[in-house]
Image 1 (tube, rainbow, N blue to C red):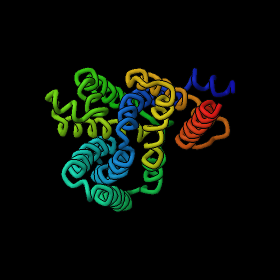
Image 2: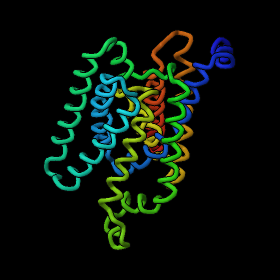
Image 3: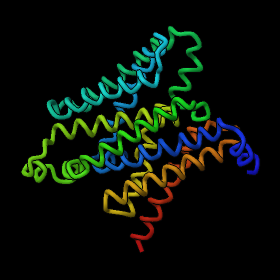
Length: 273
């Protein structure tokens, strides 16, 4: 226990990891609340896993994979959102196809790059202990963009999340804000990739918000609680994984998953009584 805190006080890599977890938790708590309320976890999963294609291409051409991921995420969000709005009867199959194509492209391009094994594992399962100052700045910038977007369009996003007919009557462009919400999800996915990787990103995006929804009904309070829980889970995961040298991303998700199960059992037991 003391070794973790001694290292945290003296080593920049662990300080960056903790700060990265905090910054990512802000994005996942804010956006994850809308993902949970709108029940678009599967769509978020399609966006997340198609991102590997952009990362693979960027890595192959010696470009920053983080930027490649962001570009791929936004493109995928627009494609998946358009499918949802225009071809609802083919939605699940089309999202699954985009999911698979993105991952396949990423694996192919990464496999043609030097040192692909280590980098593929990093992309899939995260490397929070390797976050650089530049990546922290990018995550901070994306958090700021998310906060500005929510501040400007909070009422519209709440309206399309709870009552589409009312939003339409009030003159809200439902299709536009739905696509913008998916773009916000795409940005948040990129925030979390460095923390827990593509495989586990949806869990950290949705579990804190899902727990928060069990206790609060206001989406504003839900976002605040989800942010706090995300910070708690990432900090606890780093702490628990450090001394036994466990994968930090997987440990973070394990903590979040156990917390969700315990919370659900508690709510069920309380309701039963």
